[in-house]
Amino acid sequence: MKAFCRYRLLDDLKSLAALIAVLLLVPLLLSITLAGSSVTMNGTGSFVGSIWALVIGIVVPRGDLRLGNQFGLSRRSTFWGSVLSCTAAFAAASTVLSLLSAVLQVIYPGRNGRIEMMDIYQIAYGSSTVGVMPAWDYVRMACMLFALCLCFGFLGMLCTMAFWRLDRLGKWILGVSMGLFLGIGLPNLIDRFSPWLVRPARILASDLWALIAFLLVWAAVFLLGTWLLARRATIKPAAK
Image 1 (cartoon, rainbow, N blue to C red):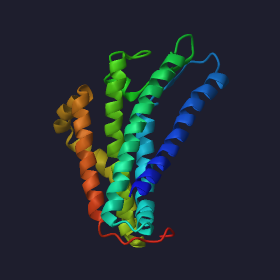
Image 2 (image 1 turned 180 degrees about the vertical axis):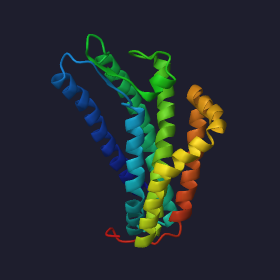
Image 3 (image 1 turned 90 degrees about the vertical axis):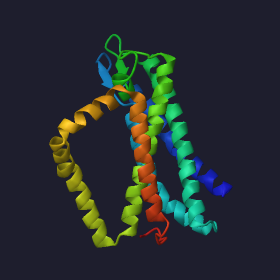
Image 4 (image 1 turned 30 degrees about the vertical axis):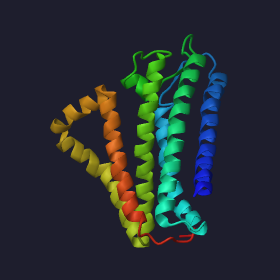
């Protein structure tokens, strides 16, 4: 079990290291190619970290169930070992990306036509919307990013397990249904129920801890759904 968790955590941290390298390289290249121009990069921590967690959630569960089976681990031990390892990786990512955002904001303050680094947290909840924030804001940003990573990561796990449980026709139906829901159904629902959504949206947009609690509740729902799908899933070969 320890060897399995160590493998999963190290694998996640390797992908995190690659992400950090890209985040360091992109503004450097922009500062060279767009010398003298004013450029604002948004979501350097929160947005990028959420997408990274979503990809981890999509990629990890199937391979981990196969690997755990080879290690002679039970399905339950494999699943929760994978979840705990990914949660630890998400905690590391939230801390590192928040620190990286602070470093990048010091290096690229956006003055004199230079690159300016911004984050979703700073725009919505930060004490200062320009330049480097107070240290406490980066702690709060790390908490928000951790909740985002959990929510998006467990959503990715739920999606991949749902597709894994279905046959080819079911995968097509689910994929098309999700596309229609996101592209047509969800916007229509938001428009129809917008009078009732304004107040909750304002609360989430103004209260960081309410947003974190909201994200954690959805993360728990996604995780429960993933476990219900995974506990009886047939462990298929990699080609499947």
